[in-house]
Length: 335
Image 1 (cartoon, rainbow, N blue to C red):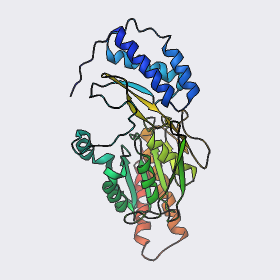
Image 2 (spheres, one colour):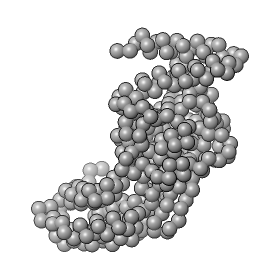
Image 3 (cartoon, rainbow, N blue to C red):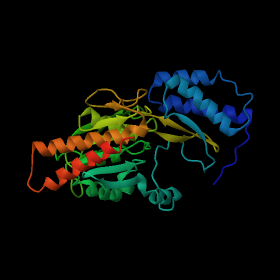
Image 4 (cartoon, rainbow, N blue to C red):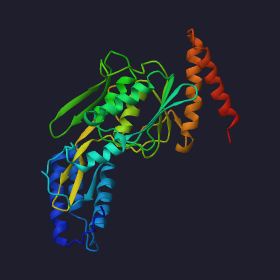
């Protein structure tokens, strides 16, 4: 459905800015930056702005210039008013977004066994396990017996830290691993994220090679997944530096026309003691995203082959030959 661009006046702009300042002061993860943004908001003149879309673009640009926080943005949305402190993104049984998510397979775009017994998973979102868990289990169980895995996050954004931990658990062993912490300013609580000692079905395991593909579009929860596994040396990252969003938060209603996503938390990795906010996840092999898959596939075939040759098992002769054939085919078909 196309939403008509609202014509706005000075009264609505002032009302929106006043409410925005109040919410930033109360919820934004860094109070000192919230104060600076509130001060800036009082000095901006929107005399030439008469459309909602233009107002959202301009005010978001000003907020992000100060905060360098790509999560922080104002949107035009005429949905029924919600509580101003709503941080929930839960779906009701009649919510059309739930059907849309299901038709998108909850962000699980492709699961495939590539020549050489390499698993490939393309993800576009980290939907919560409570709605995407069955799909996630099916995908990871399908890939469990592959000899290496490529996880493609080049078109993947954010959403659920719980799904980050859930998928990570399949790539690790039974012993829980401390993956990440999230500090929430408004409650002064730190939540710890750990891998799970039990997962439905079979694990891929902690020792077979994993490579994660990234691009400039890779953002938020997808960045957490790559950053966490890179930090504990469980996965290599191949591709572009990611978007740089490590501040989770929630949507707050400003009035009947506008809403704002305010980051109220920050990630603190237990290994690095920092996060990827503003810097992005730095790849182990930095290449243009269009070349990332080919480079990763070559690398993981080599890693998988080396692993098999170091610890040969009866019955793997055919697979070793399949890996060698896949490597030779790629070598002969390089442009």
